[in-house]
Image (cartoon, rainbow, N blue to C red; front, side, top):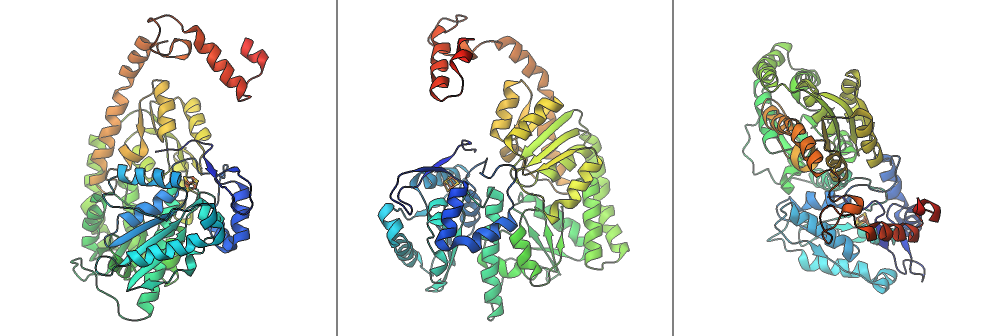
Length: 508
Ligand code: SF4
């Protein structure tokens, strides 16, 4: 789901009496937020989530990441505070992804925003919602406008009737991707639970485990991936602990029991900081493909001082299977790949090991300490890796490398389809599949192989439909094959009205 590039929010009477429209992410909104006591959080976000060539989100509303993390948790309610249009989009998307639960919303108008009544309304709604029979925690998310106008969620009570209250600011200015918004909520919860651990005994996890040393996983991975990792840990006498973002509040305590934290997804900057603050080592990258899995097991062994013999045993159990699967699924062709999920570099590694020539990897996420290993590996293979990649650079890569397959976001896939290049949507078709260990090889490579094989069919279709539904020949109101004379006129008028062309350009 992507939103138009010039995503405009309406900030009526924010601090003045004017009605104005400011693109989200604009310097003006940031300034307003600073004037409203949000400087500290904005500076922190600036450090954690440095912006790239573009300072506005180019993908879906970033707050979706936090919303999703909250909605996936049991016994946690989520309340949004923001413009109705933003909340509509966010709830629509959450239900599209199968949230199957209500999202709370506290509406506002110019008056409640300016007088501070909105904060009182949020407080009232939190108090009404805080039912300890049903809930462990309530998450309140400030979207762009309430953040810019300084709605002070930090002043909400920390606990009501035993229900924890987590208030976070997730504005489009300051949080460039929905991936990083996941980090904001995950780390806020970890911080809260860390204080609870420090203050006394906490509830035990409900999950059955073998009492072996735990490995905490960080990353919203496909459900089969922790199972793959679990089988790799068995010969090392380790087991999978909590998976952050967690599904239950108690699992947050378990997360701190991990002897090591596996940063499967590299963009959880603030989350890693919480673990580092209590001395937990972070293991970069993930057991993906042959070399990725070998290196992950070796580094895990080194971090925990596990004997080489044991590590070799773990490697011997999984690596030959991976090698065999990769040989069986051998693929051929050139690929460009981009996305905003944060797992793009890992997927690219797997594709290269399967025989594909990956020319370009663009990720909307920033370069972090945890992505260095994968970046180096890819660069050694001659891949152009771009962090905070813009839509423009993803499209440019298609022009430059003339790929056989494009994996990307909606507008990238649309561009590729118009050029009759087989293309796959990263979020729904690639990142929603297992990726780790031997189980990760079959499904992803199968869908990619099928897509590449469709190349000839695409070219045939393009030839067959050539000129139909394109430019002056588009529309269903005129006989087939006849150009719609009015079309050019209409478009020219529109372009003139929006100053996109001059009169001279229209004439030609
Ligand atoms: S809250 Fe999200 S949708 Fe609304 S203006 Fe901000 S970035 Fe855009």
